[in-house]
Image (cartoon, rainbow, N blue to C red):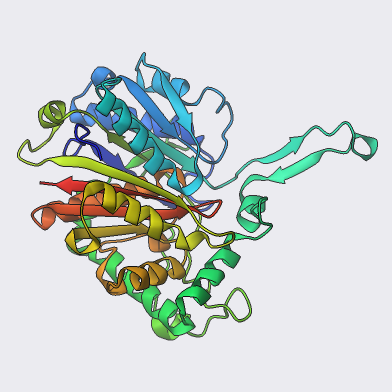
Length: 395
């Protein structure tokens, strides 16, 4: 359990998420993330010296990513060191945990978590293979090959979702109904001219030419979920419960979160009366080819670390790449599957990898503020049948 790690209120942002091969498809995610962070800092009236270290999260390799965090810091205008972290879908969770640990130990005062990824136009890699027939190379499609096959099991991510669906006794009808519910929750974030999203969302700028810049202010690629329509879709796997509607889609985007001490959080907060404390972190790895089950033990570990139970939590946000994730979690905790992920989740607004859970953290904070405070649980699965979770306390 952490005692000293806090997030300043409004000390965070997330860009809109752009659809796969959409407006951000040709932007180097490191450059775009750093440029966006620089604009966000300027909008706050903060100099880059506000942070003293960077946890740079990225999962899809970009040109010159060898330099990662230090390149991003140079673009931002910060002469600070940093580290680049890659842990698939739990990259943001891991960055926040590492930042909190550093603050807890007094190693850093105000680390910055910069999460930036681009699933569009992912690299197609060639690895030297001198012993191959005629020196034939080994090739890898960064996204598709790894989504379709975990090298430790040989199974793709959809297979893991269907395995967990069977374990939960989940049905196709439940998956379809949950998809519609998650879409309706997302629509709540669009009410009153996107009032909820505008509490945290920061526009991203894309240079089309030297003279023309396009500003992306809202999510791209959201597909409406109508029960009558999606119930007619074929499942992706024969005998499974998931269609293309009941799983997430690849996306592009970035996000930033400051972690600091209680006093500094108060000084940086847009409302010093509000406190956001990072309480605990949880992690887990479950049986092979059961990835969507991993958020449950990770959440239990985080809840135990915070000294609370699931009934004490006011806001629950999950990274739910498949309907099976939430159906399994709801069954294991004995909670209403329709009662969490208010205002949105990755099933609907997409999955750009590193910033995905950062957006869940930010949305969870903002929902808790609207509720007058409370405990926030954020959990989700990640490649390799793993999961991670955080518990925050919003006061």
